[in-house]
Image (tube, rainbow, N blue to C red; front, top):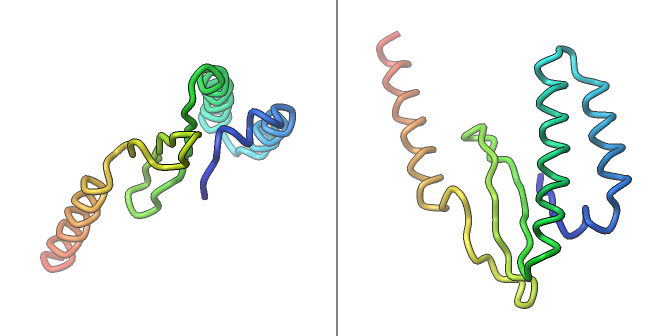
Length: 107
């Protein structure tokens, strides 16, 4: 699942509606507050992205339960930077696997 800021900029009303639907469907107040913060952050990033020749792409790494951000050059469509770096993502995944094996063997 990836969210490309350049597509959000073209349809800000659709983003707001998606965020409202997401916050309405949340079961508790903490998740609704997080959805509002995400909506605010997306709006700020859209404004910042409009001032540069780069765009941001967000995806969710399910193995890490972490958001991954890619900075993409709009002119060449090449990934300039990925946060966290791909190598670190692989290291984190491997550490989780090893920790999982360790606890499975001890249990």
